[in-house]
Length: 213
Image: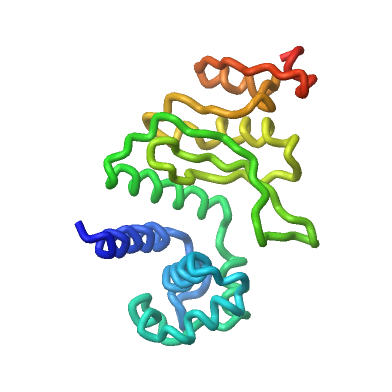
């Protein structure tokens, strides 16, 4: 299959999943379809747009793209801010996870192993502080499955526990999670056991909690 055609089909698949998100607006008088705005935002971010104003300009200079997304004009910065603020983060996480699982199945990848790793989100700040997240990566398809927001590096075990308890069961076929020595944590170990799974930890002297786990 031609790579360009394949990418186009995969983006169309993403649009189908974005269309599942709840639109809290009254249907009367709607100008911009939510799925179209979100799709434009995704494309803008993929093309390096660092801000909402850059996403607006990106759409404004690509009118042929807007028509394909069902948009009559590029959404203003105010519209982008308002619509993105209305979308449920939890619902977005769920829909994107469903999309990635469907995408990996389409590519012939069975997700059995995932890696947990804390990352600082480049260019993403709140009150002047760069945000951090625990990222969950599929080892088979090298795809990002999910993210859990956290305050600092030492909150990774807590974020991992949250993900295991709330999300891991939505990944059928997932058999193994890997992480570094920081995850030698008592509460995380208990969460794994509560899921009916087993664990083994790598111990390091730099993690004093590991000796009591």
